[in-house]
Image 1 (cartoon, rainbow, N blue to C red):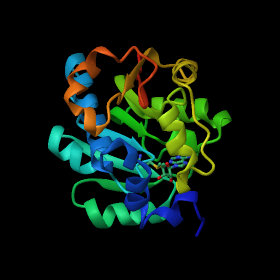
Image 2 (image 1 turned 90 degrees about the vertical axis):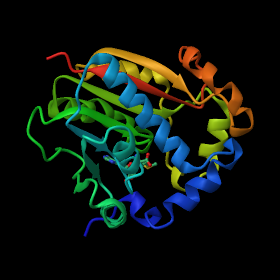
Image 3 (image 1 turned 180 degrees about the vertical axis):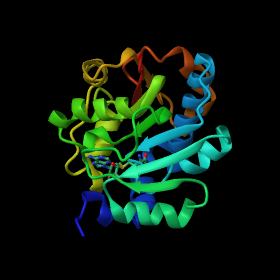
Image 4 (image 1 turned 90 degrees about the horizontal axis):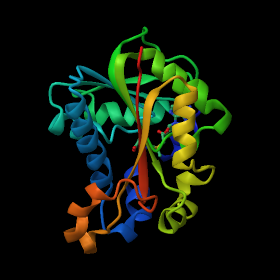
Length: 232
Ligand SMILES: C[S@@+](CC[C@H](N)C(=O)[O-])C[C@H]1O[C@@H](n2cnc3c(N)ncnc32)[C@H](O)[C@@H]1O
């Protein structure tokens, strides 16, 4: 069986992650949930009913309980190159999502299968020269009008850089600036690719978080996402 980098982290992924983000005062679930809340809000604003969503690089399936909570009518397909992560995910959440192996090249679904796709903290683990072709492959399996959401760590934020530099499973990570990721989404044929910065305040300053909705333009957030649309 082929080995993927994340096979060796699958069992202890949550504890490694929790230790790494300790400075934020939040747990991994906080970081998983805000993404699905944002996606649900964006799809709602665009009037998109997502019957089937692709979680590209889903790992052990962090997103699954939050799709169940915030988009209960949506079927979720978790795709990953790490068979071990998929096994752990399926054991935890197999009743709520499907866990499917990805060979790193072709997504095993026909054109136009999904209304939306998510990639959460995945692209910094993939060689940069593969980004555009993988984004093209995700675009292929989206329906016309479908949306892509690429969440990434913001390399402009010093606390984020510190967290990545001290994280065991980020040893080979190469962070992607938001404007680069937006350009790559456009190169892959996506339209209306926008950047939104996220996560400005740690738990201790959580009272200020309502302001975050007005700060998405500010390149200081710990994370960002690129929201892009498949025009045709
Ligand atoms: C940091 S984990 C993120 C997992 C999950 N998205 C989350 O938010 O918790 C990165 C994941 O990307 C996966 N990955 C790495 N290279 C990949 C590729 N070429 N295609 C799909 N997934 C990949 C890894 O196996 C790992 O599960």
